[in-house]
Image (cartoon, rainbow, N blue to C red):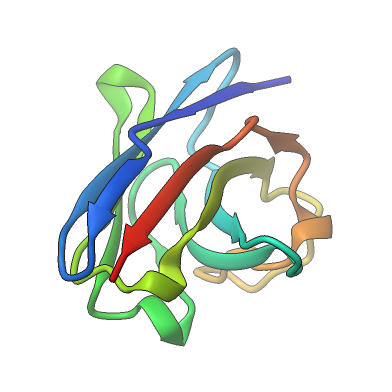
Length: 131
């Protein structure tokens, strides 16, 4: 099993930027996917972005396209979420999650975007965007 730890959250003004990190320990491999989710108070956890460990494929939800960028540094065993042009509605606890793609039945190049598809979860980091 892979252990995931998020960091980088904080308080930022609207229009500002933050970079979240997701440090992975344990056995990662090229067909391991890492996703970023967020959960605002009183709302369901929702998908933001995902990347396959070898970096070839990424996936974004429409609300963050053009503002968020997911990337990874394999040497550091870390996945990043660069968040630009932040809005107050981006305020939430942000989680990274991981899963092996083998056995999910997805097409080549597709990445999971549902909470139930991910196995490994971090504890989250709070992001607050003030207006």
